[in-house]
Length: 456
Image (cartoon, rainbow, N blue to C red; front, side, top):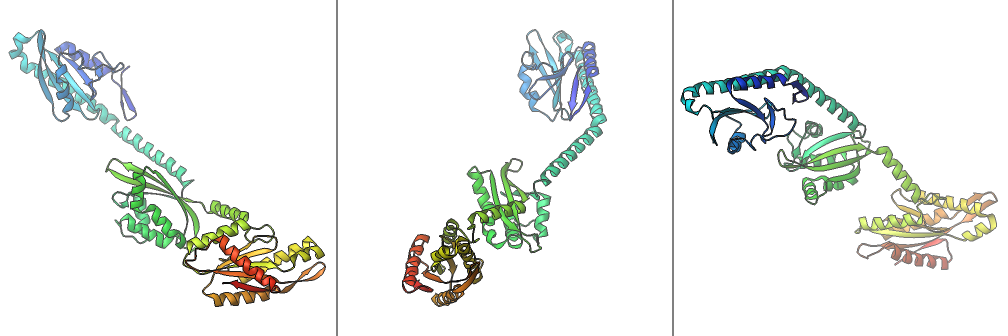
């Protein structure tokens, strides 16, 4: 059974094939429908089931290129062959992307060519007209159904894609990076919602997104990752995917964590590099991650930073603000061993916990506060000058000279303190600061404890 398929709608062509066969026998012509490569799709005795090229063994093989290269006009050709010749008429059928080829072999009629030429042309043209009329009517008959099916499939696909995407992503935007512009209506509307006029270049809109929605400490990283020149450079280096996590607000003042995954690709239709941006709300995931990281960095007894985390935070501050003036402070609880020996380790633990609480109260949230040994603590903070540091250490010495209530009664404690100033350009690192502050600490202890020394 012969079938022609048109966008998912098929119809039988047995009747068309039979009609071609009848016309061929009646008017001594042969009709073929061939694809752009010359493969026979339908003839009076062929249906395209087995690929056969019309131009491989026929008498008009030399006409293959002129026939298959012209999709605009009806063409006619005379051809010569051993023992005779023939006449061809061809027409490209755009709706099927096939060529109709009508072959009238005139080998037996050469002597009557002049008398029969007009009638032969008429017959061939009539066959062309009939075939085109039949095919056009069939296509028109199913055109409405084809369009309806196509639209329904497209809607179904978009619905499935949108539903699936919404489960993972908050928004999906598209950027034409080469031409520095939004590449979808949704992206254009998003930029307009931030106050960018329609047609605003992408790099300008990117600045507005950073300024209005992204938390300040993440803005530069966002701009450095997604600016057009950085995207084009990434594409040239073979990088197809980028990812960035940052905090964003929708205008309410409350920030939440979001992840942007960007896919870079080449769009052949206009020779542009484009970027699909998938925005995913990861606030719960990120806050859990941060919480777990903070818990891993804490000293289990006091809740201050442990030794490794303290070192990491000090080094990070030194790298981020090399031009700032810092103070590195080491504190020891005086006679702490005797507390453990006299009152037990439970009492010693309580002393450590209350000592740590005093440090929290005396310093800011952004200052580094850690326990780096049994009764040894570190504080690292920015200071404006030495005078401020001296006042802070005096107040701290007074606050730590106190009585702590334990099960056995009152336990008097105090602290010995050593400090050093980390000045810009001195090339300070954690280890060198520790050595200097530790030296100052022992100066305090040798002087009688319960006080402070600033190493110069």
